[in-house]
Image (cartoon, rainbow, N blue to C red; front, side, top):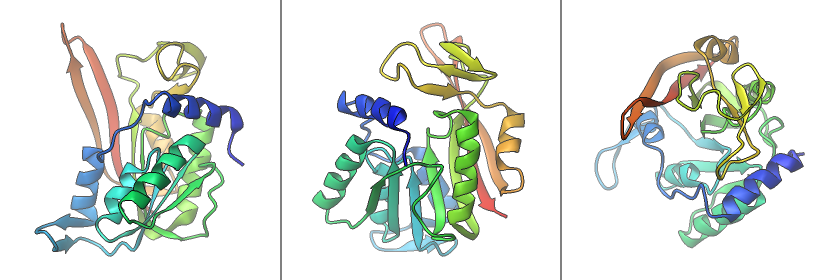
Length: 231
């Protein structure tokens, strides 16, 4: 069963009409184009590897499940927020797409072993305690087919907001201001990245994306971007 407090927290975020981007994250588009399939023409793709079914983990309003479904790939999405899943269902139906959206817990996925060829998750595993992220990584591994692909991105411990909020433990804070007030933010070090994937996934590529924020460009937004393969 999904954590009710966390679900209520994210319902509040979505009900205030935050987190409502309607286009896919550029790094997930690149992940798809480089490792799954790249769109060449209106109706032709260059297939990198056969992927029949993709799970959008912590899907929010379903924008990444929609991205894959539009390419003819069977898609599913799961999120702890009832509000987010309601929007996702409404959106997919409005475009005539059949997507398996469910409310659920990322540490106890309601899918069979090996059900997916790829899993993507954007800004999710860094918004939960590290213990939850570790359980979720094991669940992702369970529902992936052999050598299945796993994309995730994570806030870096080099980020300018590191240390802001109420400290819970090393690299982990409760957000105390803004629309994510009361939610967890974990900032990942390189060692934690290795530990998260150790024994589960082989890293295909690992990058740190950084943006300097004005007006003085001293603030640095920093995020890990990782593509991995189940082992």
